[in-house]
Image 1: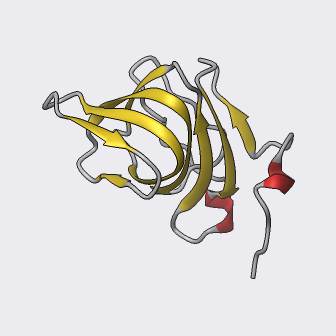
Image 2: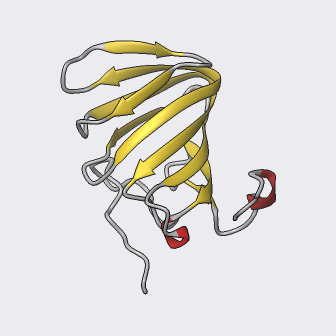
Image 3: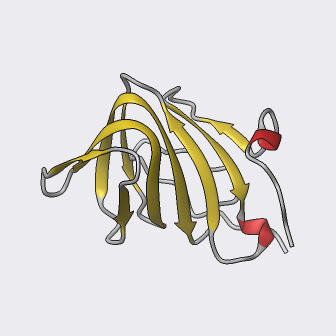
Length: 132
């Protein structure tokens, strides 16, 4: 059994800050736990815009605080995401988040991330694996 707190992750290698400066993520469950998914608390900052494409992962997101506009870049459809709203990127959709208020969410990735990922120039997380 594993028990840990997001607060305990602050300032550790599990507390990742994007090179773009638009978000930070506390990765409480990672690939090295070998449970088939990773679990993160992510904060996207108000006034920012981030384009993403999880070509190698499925992501489910639940908003717990703040507000954002989610755009499906393939269809142009937009959604307002507020606390209690979930979105699932089950088709590897290219998408853009425009953050209205600091946006705190809980995210699940499959396959799990290692904790070293950041978005590349296409908004993609590389598919990294754990050794052993």
